[in-house]
Image (cartoon, rainbow, N blue to C red; front, top):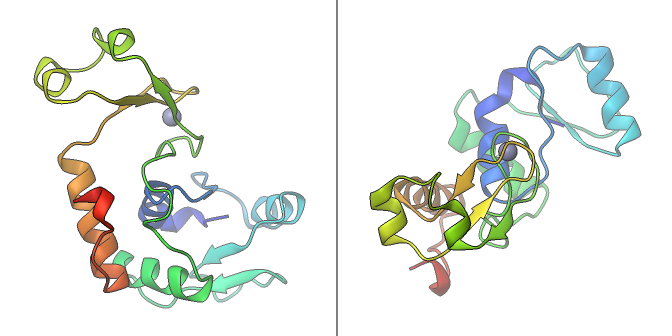
Length: 151
Ligand SMILES: [Zn+2]
């Protein structure tokens, strides 16, 4: 359960395929309620918050924040990356290439064979330049090289 001031961190966690709930301008009470109901750990920078499952981030820097979360919770960003919608936090589904021909820009469509789509917002995803940037971010955060399948 990512606090509202940590939107960038939430998106990076979702890029790594991790379930990161985030809502704009969520009230502290609602943050507590949802984390309790859905058994989520709260990630926040607000020192005034307290909950049994809460991780207090100290850095403003998204790379340092991400690294802290990976190390503290023993997570691997290379395990299931690019499986979740960064906007909705919902798992993507694989789609037939023909089904997205009208939605995907021609150059991307020509270059890629595999596409995934968010069942909620219907945004289509493929392995493009944003994927490369994210993999580099994961490498920097973990100090490890990406696994063979992402080279
Ligand atoms: Zn979506």
